[in-house]
Image 1 (cartoon, protein in one colour):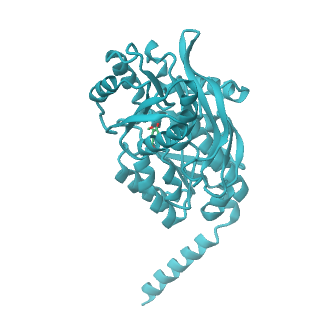
Image 2: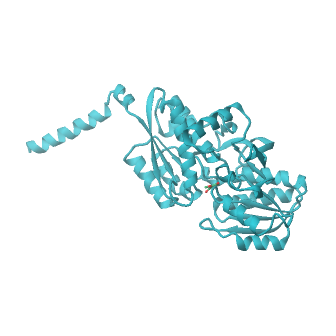
Image 3: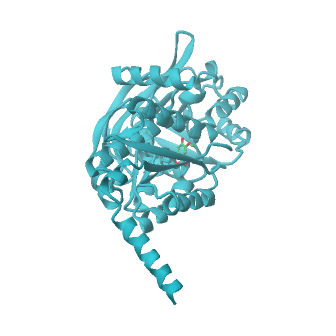
Length: 390
Ligand code: VNL
C-alpha cells in the first residue's frame, strides 16, 4: 500500500514537474528540427545538396534562432517512402521536433503528410515538386517549386520560338504527370501540337528505346522532365543516338540541366533552353554571396535543391522567431505569408495555398570561363502554382 502510494506520488510529481518546467530551463533546451533526406541510393545527390544548404544556414546564423540553439537531426530514408514515414513518426514522438523538413521525392512527402496532420507538426518540403503535395495536409508548406510552374513557363516560350511540334518525355510518377499535363495543355493553347507522350520509370530508366521513338517521330523538339540526378545520363544517350545531329531540339525543365551535373555534361548540353526557379549563375549580389560561401564550405556547386534546403531553414527560423520557439499551428500560421529574398530572387509563401510563389526563368546552357551554366534570359515574375489556380 505505502509503496504503491509512494509510486503514485512520484508519478504525479514528475508530471507536475514537467508541466511546470521553468521557462528559463525550457528556453535553454535546443529547438529540434527533423530533416529526412535521401542520403543514399538513386537520389543521394539531392540529399547531399540540401544538407549543404542547411550547413550554410547553420554557419551563417551560428545555428541559433532568437538566441536559442537549434539542433538539426538529419535522417536518411534512402528514397523509400515507408522509411520516410517511419522516421517522421520517430522524430515527432521521440525527438519532439517542432518541424519536419526535407523530402527528396514526391512519394516520400505524400507518405509523411498524414503524420504532419495527426501530430500538427509543420512539414517543409525542400525538394519534392508535385503540385498536389501541399494539398495533402494543412501542415505542409514548400520551398522548392512545382512542376506546373516550370512546365507552363517553357510551354509559353517554345511556340514563340519556332517550336510547333513536340514529343514529351517524363519520369513516370507524380511530378512527371504534372510536367506532361501542364506542358501539353499550355503548349496546345498556344497553337502547338503534341505528337507523342513518352515515359520512363523513376528507378533505373533506360532512355535508348524512347529516344529511338523520338528520332522516328521527328518533332521540332523534345520536351523533357526527369528528376535531379538523371540529367547527365540522359544527355549522354541523347548525343549517342544522334538526336542533336538529326536537328531535334531539346527543351526541358531545369531539373535536366541541373547545376549538380551540368559541368560534366559536355557540349551536347550547349544551347539547351530550359525553365526553372534557380540557376547558380543568377546574377544578383545575394546569389553571388550564396554561391561563394556554399562552395567554400561544401566544395561543390549548389543546385536548386541546395537553395530549397537553405530557404527552408530560413522559413522555419523566421516562423520560430515570431512564435518564440512554439511549433504546431502557431508555427504553421507564422510561415504563411512570409516573404524574403532568396538566392533565386524574391519568394513568397502564399497564405491561402501554403505553396511557393516565385520568378520562373527561361535559361540557355552556355559556356563561360570553360564551364557550363544555365544563363537566364527571360522571366515570368512571381508565378503562383498553376496547379492550384483552377
Ligand atoms: C521531384 C521533382 C524530385 C523534381 C526531383 O529530384 C526533382 C519529386 C529528385 O517531386 O519527386 O528534380
